[in-house]
Amino acid sequence: MLLNFIRIKKHGFTTVKFLAITLFSLLFMQACTPSAGKPLQRYQHSIEGSYAGDISNDGKWSVISSIHHGISVWDLEKNALKYQWAQQQNSSDNLVLAIDISDTNSHALTASRENFALWNMQSGKSEGYWKVRESNIRDIAVSNNGDYLLIGKGNGIAVHVAVDTGRRLEFLGHKEKINTVDMMPNGRVAMTGANDFTAYVWDTLSGQVIYQFNHTSRVSKVALDPLGRYAFSADSMKSAHIWDLKTGKLVTTLKGTKRHEVFSSARFAPNGKVLLTGAASSKVSVWNINSGKRIASWHVTPKEAKRPTGAVVYSLAFSDNNTLLTESSSGYAERWKMPK
Image (cartoon, rainbow, N blue to C red):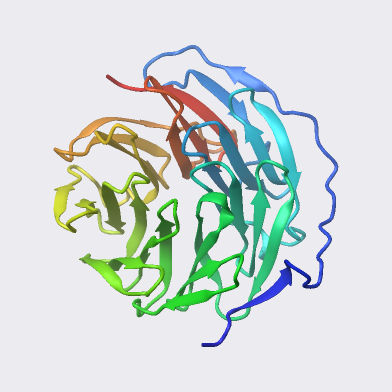
């Protein structure tokens, strides 16, 4: 099997020194008066918007990418800047466009089209830097403790990497470009969706398919419940399904979705009762898992501009039972009251 990556930093390989970025002043927090469709609080994390972002599963941390500030790590409980990282982000071709935080907050994985880096969330230091030889990176995922990495590529190949041993397993099930990936916290099960109208759940040790979920158009978003109960897959033509991860059977199909509602993020609630989704149209929705009905929806705040602009919802998470958080391309993290 041909290796797809050039290892640049790890265990005796050539060291890459990242350029230090001067810390900018902490951006201010805007408190908003709670009302229908309005956030309880709004935090500005990037003045001119961001290119990617992820919120930790427990709602405590956020990692975003922006052209002026590189990669920023935010403590959402204090709205304080924790770290700034640089991933050779010195050109528009090398912007970080994908971010994933491990379920235990131990590590974060960031990627541009051509390279990806593993970061320790406790020390703030890089633990590895790799460059892709073939195709381009489309989406990424990282397991607990940064033990395993999952890279979905434009040539239809998904690569599962064991960081300590360097073992690489290529999943060749897809026939076209991969758009979205996810991985269980222990790194043993992966889910991928592609332009071939198919989403696969597969074993990362053997590469064998566990479940195949068929769609009528390109699969734009997949997500796994960290507790192993559900899987989510959605396509570009308004079909979105929740599957039983233990049996592979359909639990429900989301009702009332529209063609322009292309999902950009999804997360299952810890209680297993609701699913959160964010869309490229700035829309956030709360869905009942059993019925597939939309319980509530609203729009995140767009970037301030003279002309109307939208916002892509990069990530969402529960901060507690009563509130949830969103991070969007407008550069804002926002806290919302959870509908009853």
